[in-house]
Length: 390
Image (tube, rainbow, N blue to C red; front, side, top):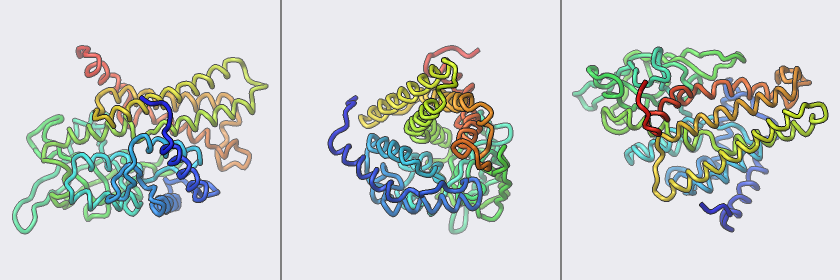
């Protein structure tokens, strides 16, 4: 792996930095888990698209720049350095988008990728169900095939829960059982469906802060054309595992996110070090080193992929690392702040507008979403280390 940037890559970095400096909003946007904030973040996605920064790794015909993964990592570093808004379209551009590139037909790519890159269509993720959270093979929601007439279609029925962005999103992707006699990971299909379709009911799930970052989705014979199935019937598990690989291994949590948090943590420590115990310094140094280690590992993964490699079950170790790193950094920040760290952003005297408290609360979900860390450890044991089942 080459650890020096080329002249072309350095020029790319400068162009990203210059554009972001001119366009990143001067004031933070409202929370994307509110109607107002969701609209503001959607508009930001459209601003990104106006500069052709919506999703830089995609081919130009699909709304991208045709950049490689190293350039994407550079873009992410500059994006977080500029404290640009969170990506409300992340389920689409980081998860579904790469999956469509690999498994979608040309017609599906043309239909879904350009509006995804432009922020015109925001996607929700609908994996989990009651009694089928981390155990995604236990899915019971069904898609019944109806043939005859001018077009074959599916009738979707069932319930999805913990669906991120579903309250305000336009579309969702998820797994459905298309073979009623199947069990576990067999007989599942990957289907795309509009959240405004007849038969879809959305029920918001309120978080600790009162905002609706998640939702339950109830499906009552929702009619979906067969052409909105991704891949072959029964191939859903294979496709979903590829999506999970993008989620855990590379795209969803770029190292720049954690490097920026580590930098902010270092600045917080320097501003308060006169009154802190010696252990605080060690915790901050460890967080900084871990963020850099995660960055180097991601560059290694990107380089391997660019040479034709594949993402495998080792992404489970990646997911455990970044989720526990995020929690450790925010826990360290709150220990530095003491009682001041408990002030929310609604208080005018809150440190950094309460970002450390918000970040800590969100970090607690890290070991659960994208597959709980307990399940990831099982995957590492069985598929990476070859250990027998207990």
